[in-house]
Length: 579
Image 1 (cartoon, rainbow, N blue to C red):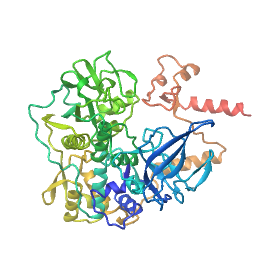
Image 2: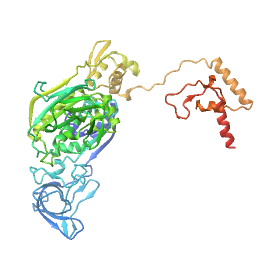
Image 3: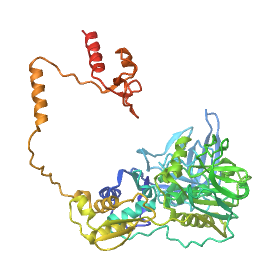
Image 4: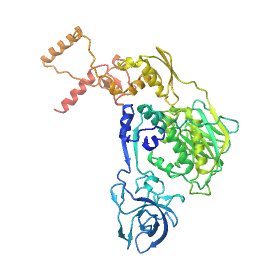
């Protein structure tokens, strides 16, 4: 999981002087595996500014199309005169706002920019693509075209958030909560002893009878399903720069506004979402197991034959999505470049699916996705409504839509998980006296509700399904107090009585046989059943009654030996063959 430090600071007031390396050290001390800290824009040096294309002259006579452009960069070049630039890209036009790097600047990779003559013209700078600025894939593979309202001459380094630090965390299978900015922000707040501004604390309207109809036929596979509808989205709305940049920093490619918003909220809150084109969904949305013979074409364009254990999302026609893994192509929201197919109405799905079911479906279809990775490791079921609300708010803000008043929530009642443990259990596990106050404080920091004195009754937070017993609670206390603070002491072994009589006899016999010239032979205890035929044993010979292994090292030798002869004779044959 990639965590931009700038995004993390929105939820935790870290000291201004704190660097990514400092945060890395704190999180490692708290038990998270922060593998690297990437310094974005570390070797980037301006001037890098916003420009507006004034003229384009097509240069002919070259092997590839070349354009000679004049670009207004304001006073950034010191003169206010248009900047003359040679460019080979074709995805921009006169009047577009672009990113211009001026002479004297240095791009990522140490590439210095200077005025130079090329294709018969002198180019005073360069019009930049996302790859050249180290921004990652933006899906265009061309020049960055900025929104029309962007101010000419503005510093593009700040505008595009090109300088940042990104922590790369190897999230273990039990910490699905850390596959989100929210989860890592919580761990960071605990590590620094600072308050957390929880992005999931939103005003969420309660369910009512006016929401999009949903029927959950398998409450075990899906214990929570929230549906919200947004209408009147502008088909021309685009994802803003800040949203695109955050997706790029966490390793995702911007696609279209609706998809980008659902991906953004998933990264922020850890709750996978899916947006359906409302005009393409027919009737009630359902959740059930697949029926034999059913097929679905997923968003990657692959037709998949469904298994009876697959959990699927359906409408009146049949499956429209592999639950928790990937949506179907039949209800896909069209790309914003296709205005004829772009939708104005979407249905937002925020659901909680069974971990094991999603993991098996993803493996069965060899289809791992960002959503399935999170469901496999555990998603906070209480975050579904907040994630749906956050998605609705962003779509209304960025695309001018209207949130319908209807709210659908299908919930299978589940009691919060409670663990009873002695207050001194972490002391016994670690061999350190923490005391009740420290134990309670650390568990409360994690999000647990703690009651009791000598015997603690602990209610586990919804985002930590990995806390299942007293030892898990002890682990939380120990890691937050610091593994490095555990004393290093060698255990004192009890005074022994030497070898037993049988052990002494075994050693005496071994020494006597070795002294007489015998050599001990150690062979594998595994045999094949065919070896008994080679030994000429009768069909009812007791030696044939072997114990078969469930997971043998070799299918050719799946049984435990009942005689030493097969191994000894095999060794004799091999040794004789080698002279």
